[in-house]
Length: 340
Image 1 (spheres, rainbow, N blue to C red):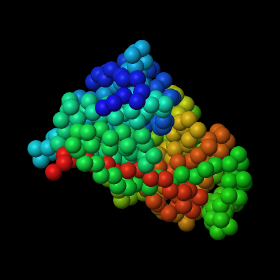
Image 2 (image 1 turned 90 degrees about the horizontal axis):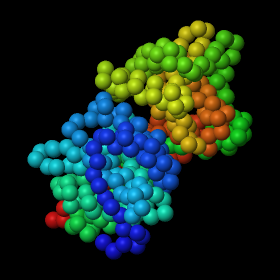
Image 3 (image 1 turned 90 degrees about the vertical axis):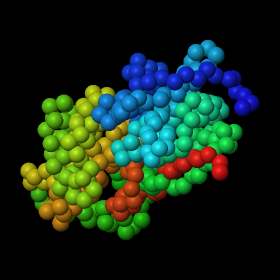
């Protein structure tokens, strides 16, 4: 590959990169072409501690001066006698998965990293999920794959609806259609008018422990996939993640309480200028009071008060997201196989 930017030194690290290199990692993320909570060293460390197996392969690029300029976190699994390389983590808990690289030369840096992956890991297949559609990872992989005689296919993976916020709740409502405004206001009246209600958010670790119990109960009451998703191991991951993010002031775990009854809960994250609605649950027996919509509306109001630019509903096309004014963004599913 011809260097169009200063050539770099590439090395392969293990899980120590999540801890010993965390500060450098965070500094690079701030300079990267994209910045998301799911790409932080802390997120991947906590996930790896609960679900990781064998070892990760963390490909890092450094400039001639030693400055960290790119990170490509990968893992390998064996399936049907194939060596399959994926991004480190799990698309079931990370709504966005990607590499990170200095934005000035991101494509060049990532293409170098992918070339080292093809040479070092010799994969039979690459399978990547939840890569943001505008990620520099995609053209960098296509460039490197062509040089290493791999064919890349890119398909839409998930929709990730996002609402662009205003400086006030009333101002935001004015950006919606008349029907959307009417429905939101009607459901909030149904949830709140004529009764005592509260919207409470955990501020201490003691409050968090109590509210996590409520969150898990309401999450499982929502039924279906949510009930199957919250295994004992997943609960432990959520607890560890929540306490870590609370300590960093990045967690907003909240409960909508009506007449003393906890009816709905949301778990949201704050990162950069985004407020991310990560998970939620409500008690179906109180569906007539619209507690789920009330909880989401209050989370959006919190985001506006915290001056977030966007409210990210994350993966999934549930109808309530569009009722609240979100518009689709997309993630990609990427596969690469050797040329026939």
